[in-house]
Image (cartoon, rainbow, N blue to C red; front, side, top):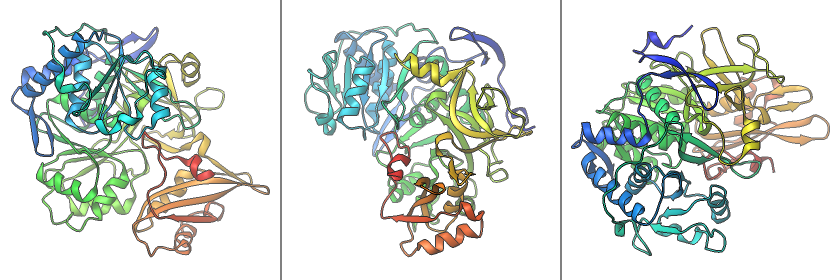
Amino acid sequence: MIDWRHHITLPDTRTETHFGGRSLRCFTVRPPSFYAMFSQAVATRPDHEALACNDQRWTYRQLDAEVNRIANGLAARGLQAGERVVMFISNRAEFVSVLFALQKLGAIAVPVGTREQGPGLAYIVQQCGAVGIIFDDDLADRIPDSATAPALRLRITTGIKGETLSSLNGPDIAPATVDEEACACILYTSGTTGNPKGAMLTHFNIAHSVIHFEITLKLDHEDRAALAVPASHVTGLVALIAVMVHVAGTLVIVPEFKAAFFVQLAARERITYSLMVPAMYQLCLMQPEFRALDLSAWRVGGYGGAPMPVPTVRSLAEAVPGLTLVNCYGSTEVTSPATIMPLGLSAIHNDSVGIAVPCGDIRVMNDEGQPVATGESGELWIGGPMVVPGYWDNREATAKGFADGCWRCGDIGSVDEQGLVRIFDRIKDMINRGGFKIYSVEVENVLMSVPGVVEAAVVGHPCPVLGERVHAYLYAADKKLTTDTVRAHCAARLADYKVPEQVVLTDGPLPRNANGKLLKRALRG
């Protein structure tokens, strides 16, 4: 059994009851609120660099002044604790200052990815009952009008048009007192089969997630994290923004991920910590200057959302010997991490997403909701203090998605005798070809080992004879790659019925939704 105590010093824990009856293992000492993390960083390291974005720099003292100004201005405009404010803001310093201004007021932040279009944004605004929206100038045409969203009384831009953040002001206010079980942020899940659901991230959830990241990845105030994923996503919001504030480190904001720009920034800013999807690491490796730049400060490279191809792992180890890759598996509903691979073990157990976080609980259940034997596969149910209490104003979805204090994640996986968690597939993504069950992720792992492949997706296409046939979609940097080469590569590594019968090579990245999740339904046609 892999035990966290062999790898880190664990803080004291105790069993507590939360969210109306969940018995949870909790950290005894933890931040009382999301805003308390920020105020603690300001108090302990006021002159430490908090944010860097392009050529701009803010210390914690300077960021605190901006947070206070915005909070005072929003209070003067009548914003109350518990009210919802949508943040339609790109990766920029204003995202952070607005986020903590809302937390100071006890308001609920509702970050929305800037790829969201008008109808989706209007649905979110209405579903959460938002009273305000703060948005970038260039997104103004997507903001719902008064007829569509009559409750939306505050419309504030981060730029120079209309009522702006820079114009906000008001008398000083004291921080709101909030219960740790109160909702701090609402993050809307992808909604691939219907309207998105608003997961309620509480102060209690966030506090446990940041401690999980801090202790397992051994992060502290000297770390400099690259925010290269959307700030509005749970990874950006919790694993990077919240974690860096919690340890009083430095957040380096990447306005838009471009591999050539990112590797130069990582060297210049002495980045020590990142959390990205594997394709982003692969694109970095393809940059001609990657091996020439000084990336020696880069210590922890977290990844999730897809397997890390073994060739990528080897190439990164060769190019950046001091970089430790760490598989992190989680979701919005578990406030980011549910499992983390202990430092140094990713290369040894590259087929696993790690072990349950110290306060987490991973159960493997059959279709009847009963636990399966160790090592057998089933649906993963995730429990722990980082699991959200449910979805905003959506009892039906909450009842369906949560059971026995756990979130039913919809992934098929297993937990072995060492506690290592493996993910085989989404329940709905398993392909049935003539009675043979095929986990699409297994085929995708093989496809990702083809040199030059950046992204791969496998789906089942209907077949009147076999039920489904295996189809693969690839985005490759190597434009000379052929479908015959890909199928031959698979045939040498997979059972014949698992080999894709059709391979489609695309000219660009595979389709993703506003949250960055792969849209397999678009590939199924």
